[in-house]
Image 1 (cartoon, rainbow, N blue to C red):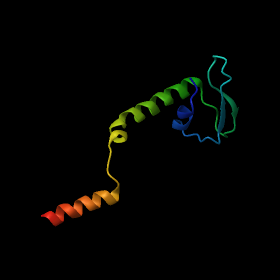
Image 2: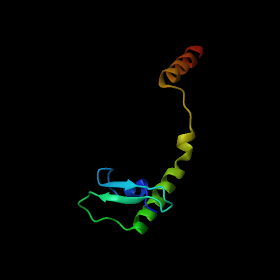
Image 3: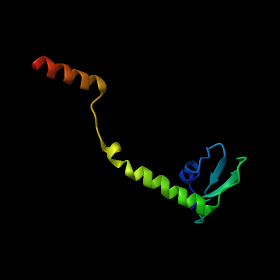
Image 4: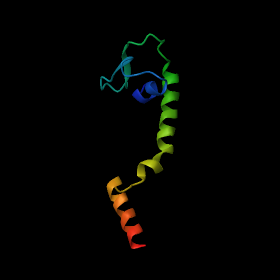
Length: 84
């Protein structure tokens, strides 16, 4: 499967390729390859997409953490110190 995230994981930028999906059920394909580097195989892109997804999934805890805005945190700290 050709994915944007897979190509980015391989070190390419969005300036290196143009993806297209004709909505014909065949999926996304590389419409234009603009990089000086060789175009990676679909298998390489799929493997890199799996790595990118695993990295994203492993950081779910970080995305779920909710902190008060910094100003509110400092205000709470000040009141805690002031209260003893």
